[in-house]
Amino acid sequence: MVVSLDIAIGRVFLALKASGQDKETMVIFMSDHGGDPKYGGNNAPFRDGKFSLYEGGIHVPAMISWPGQIKPGTVSEQMMSALDLFPTLCQIAGCKPDITRFDGIDIGPHLFEGQSLGRDLFWQQQAAGNDPKWGLWHRETISAYRHKNWKYMHTRDAGDVLFNLEIDPAETQNLAADYPEILADLKAKHQKILTTFPKRKDVQ
Image (cartoon, rainbow, N blue to C red):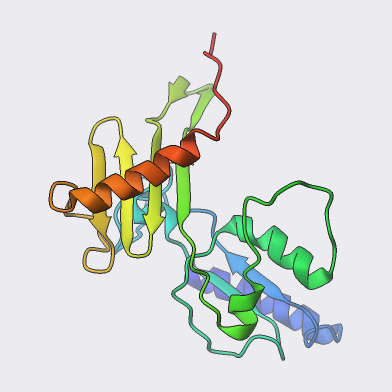
């Protein structure tokens, strides 16, 4: 997989160089989710994978190259989302789409000036489908909220869970009972976001 990825991205850069566009083109690579453990995916040291809101499902790499704009070898630990790409590229291109709000943010100030993004992130996983092999299926609805190194999750089976990702990136220790104030704060912020979602109609 890694070798195949390296070859494929190399072809992109070679094509850009051959066409003379390599010095003025931004190349972005990122994954939409972690690998699926059921099919050999291994997201170590993170827990779980695809269809999960544990770090193995949502903590993925992103690589951005833009000669003359982003210093080669720069490493960032800031949290970004695929939803940030649209507003960021719009800002770079100078376009103003006719929409009232973006779900992501412009991360240009971080990419080009090293400014901290200083943001929290929210996720919700609510997958369902009707597969010829498996029939009608619905995975557990889970949601998560990340503030700095703290991550709150709510699941049907485990209820409220709290992790400190700085000391426990594998999410093995539920600290909800040890830090009730942090739990309450993140849970309240999480619930506030949920109230902005449209109510789902019952599936008939």
